[in-house]
Length: 176
Image (cartoon, rainbow, N blue to C red; front, side, top):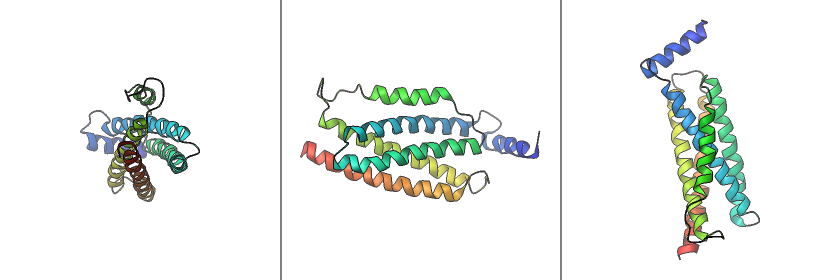
């Protein structure tokens, strides 16, 4: 075993009491959420194409896909294996979310957009929470790039603001 591998094993054992790789489970759970979030925002941006909402969501969709790629890169840096079943579960959860009742059988309900924006906002909150954990860990783990995590946190804040603005706007239109 190399010195780097020994150091990583020791760090993992200290962090997890020698038990299962809890950070790996945590990051794979975030990957599952990121997979669902990317699918959802892409679909909503496509649905809203040609509108002000679509124009606002297109850059958010691109950034969420970049954030998912950043998570995968961080997992590689930490030697966390990707659990493919988590990716499939995230994809399936997003598709299952389309089956919700929205007061319409065939057509898309205006309520669907409000609910999807709420789900996306919550997803960005969860993603930011994950970045915050990793940012704190970066203080003692050289494999994590603190600057990259600060950038990801700033971007999550902008995404949250955009989604919240449009969520409230749509809710007022639908309910007001």
